[in-house]
Amino acid sequence: MTREIEFVDTTLRDAHQSLMATRLKYDDFKDVLNLIDKAGYKAVECWGGATFDTCIRFLNEDPWQRLRNIKSKLKNTKTQMLLRGQNLLGYRNYPDDVVEKFIELSIKNGIDIIRVFDALNDVRNLETSIKSIKKYGAHAQVAISYTISRVHTIEYYEKFCKDVLEMGADSIAIKDMSGILMPYEAYSLVERLKKLTCKPIEIHSHCTTGMAQMTYLKSMEAGIDIMDTAISSFSGGTSQPATESMHMLVRERGFESGLNISVLEDLAEYFQDLRSKYIDEKLLPVKMLSVDPRGLIYQVPGGMLSNLYNQMVNLKQIDKFNRVLEEIPRVRRDLGYPPLVTPMSQMVGTQAAFNVITGERYKMVPTEIKDYLKGLYGLSPIKIDEDFRKSIIGDAEVITKRPADYLEPVLEKSKAQIGDLAKTDEDLLTYILFPEVGKSFLEEKYKN
Image (tube, rainbow, N blue to C red; front, side, top):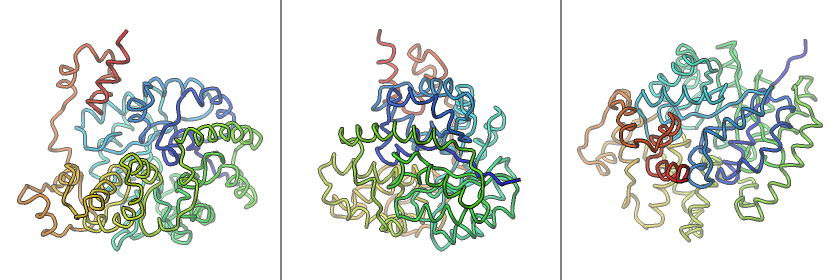
């Protein structure tokens, strides 16, 4: 029997998050969902990551309704989301009661597969998520937040996978958010993980540095089960490899893909028109479609790159963009080499921007960086220099236990705070995750 390599489509989540700061509107793709359902994907990643925040902050869409609408059109294809472990979809840790309730509602509203990761690969921050995903009947996929440092070896990732498999992970994803996983390293990593477990292994990368397609090829040769790709018109640059190209590669190698190439061609044409529209509206910077090998040095993820670029434009500091990129590895070293994935990527990027714009390193330090140095996000991969830590937070207490152990339940308290404005449990979670923006969104939603 011919081996099949399955495909997960990222067009409706990570592709547009990476290329255009998550500005894809539901109305712009709703008419093509039935076609997406005929393409033969294993799953469509369509929710999580920054989609929730962007819906209520910029698009004036209810993210829960968006999910229900998508689910109603995908009769044959599973829905998938990205979850930041104890951070959920925000930028800080939430109490266990919020994590469990959010996962329950995500599954209730239509999610089949939840890919969960922790920005520090701290398995303690994954415990509640994995347990809750299993409790409410979805597929728990745990992702490695891939990065490079003197401690981030294949043995390090192998141990991480052993730990999360014991915790109940149904599959493993290698999440290479910066496109820095080199092809032969990918071969070795996939080969080791395939010896570790018979559960599916999925590869996720970005074309930012020009390595992803080669990395996918070597991953396929090593036995990868699933590939994350985007339709060609929303692929490349800071996004994922093109679905059609990878389909052809899989077939040329003698494997099956389950994809319908004629449907993919129709989808590519549809999204080509959409891409042109977003470029014309200046929502999709053409710069995001190019390859920048400097990412192999900076390790900047696609979504972070597009957001950082937009922020520097808005601050009228775009002339300092390259200097900020150069500062990012230095900040990351100071902070103990955290992987550059949300929320750490935003924190490191913001700190690097402050260091460059003010002309003095650590003259301005965001609260989130201070909290990280206090241990409130988890354990740093490499021990942070104590003199540096004290220069930022002084003699403040540094915790060593699971950060969520210090958080009190807030569901009932938040329900009392928001009152009748939250008509549903979903509304309540919107408010809890993003209090100010969420409240404004709910006021607008129910003003009539």
